Image: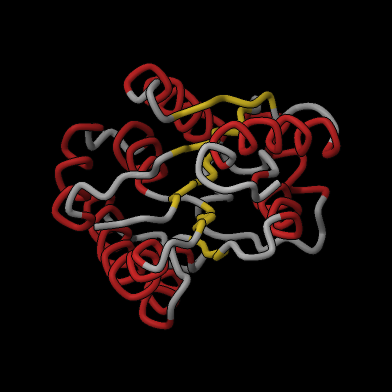
Length: 211
């Protein structure tokens, strides 16, 4: 039985969610900050395979299965123990990324990819998912202008792919309205951060006065 709070940050490439997560982590000193794919050694190794720019021959189903495998190991080795210890876990991407990217944008089907991931996560969904929304053109422009950002295989997909990713997330917002909250990520970092803090404050003060 989990007693902690599981919060995930989602969004298209270039939405700025990782930057905001780092800023939030400075406010929540006791929170566990992690990412997907990755977070632990095995999952980081899988991440390197998935995101390597030279792996252009990767089949969409292979991609979906690798994400689910990395997710499973990350969950049992890092996330679940932290939640059982009563911690707040802030995760950069989780199952919604697979549903938007592989399920919708790759055309595998949201329900089909959800089924794969239900086997991997055993119904352990986030308490709160903050979705950072941005038009793909603006997100990709941010990526190209950020010289220090890692450029991976998915970043190099065409505009049509990234447009479908955003469409997928919008479908998820309707489907999982009970846990997903949308933030307009097109504003300044300060504006987006302040919106994020207000959302977190409502969730966390019900459990502990973190903020």
